[in-house]
Amino acid sequence: MKNLTYRLYKSNNTVFTARGIALLLGETDTDIVKSKINYYVKRGEIIALRRGIYAKDPKYNEFELATKVYSPSYIGFETVLGTSGVTFQYDSRIFVASYLSREIKVKGIGIFYKQLKKEILLNPIGITYKDGVPWASIERAFMDKIYLNPKQYFDNLSPIDWQKCENLLPVYGGAIKIDTIKSYANN
Image (cartoon, rainbow, N blue to C red; front, side, top):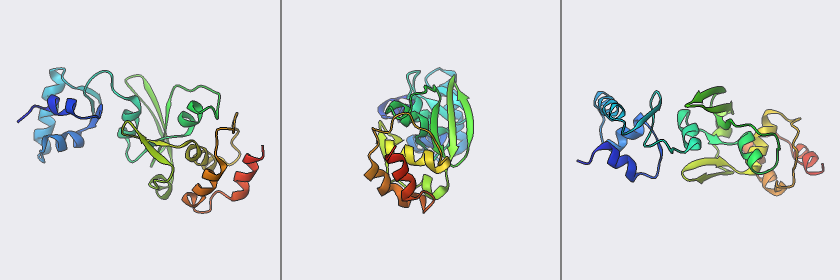
């Protein structure tokens, strides 16, 4: 049987949960999984990032980490809006849509989780995967933001496709009105 580090390095993922490692090992006994994980951490072959979260090397994907700490989740809000030029204020934290609101630091990385209702969070419309990490589209990040704060100010609305925003309205179950979208589109 191949060792754990071999299996981790064969994977495209850079960050793993203890449960994910158990699946890679094909092991159901949690005590055996914990023992193997501890062995590889002590040998320096995997990195313990946080309780139950591990990386195969120091060059792990920070966004993958952010979505694995609390799952289900996806990269959104200021992270997506800032990288797409909708907002200009720089914030080094990673903003994540999740089932809870919480701010944490893992190995110096600030991660801010914002809570969305389960029906919204689990709806896959407007979510794409980049390197195995779920990301909100610009429009989905915009809609999530105005769902939480309907009076939100944005620096540059030109990257937003307003038709895509209208198509996302059913995700929010009537909480965002078409008039709200049109008022932003006309500014």
